[in-house]
Length: 131
Image (cartoon, rainbow, N blue to C red; front, side, top):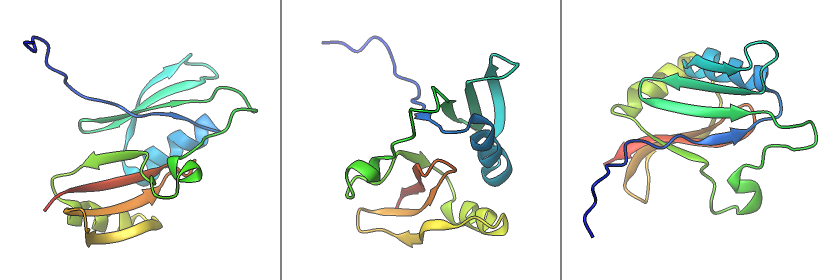
């Protein structure tokens, strides 16, 4: 079967506890920008981005909480893998921003140069590239 349509990108979609706090974390700590708020007044949905990476954030209700993968399966800890051209430089940037790392920068057993951190809602983001 011929593949006539090229897949372009995938964006993680995270349920968050507090949309404003999550947006602030991505913008202030990770260097993202807010692209979209819906609705603009008292939003429940946002898209944040940095370069070609976008993350969709949504607050549903106070009764529905974030459920990061590691809380369901300890061995499946990543909620998103973000391919970066220079993991060492990004790691240094995030160190300078005072971020706390879930896993420090290292060459991993699965062939990556990578590090991990948890966002405001405890989703695990892995930043890295194949060695």
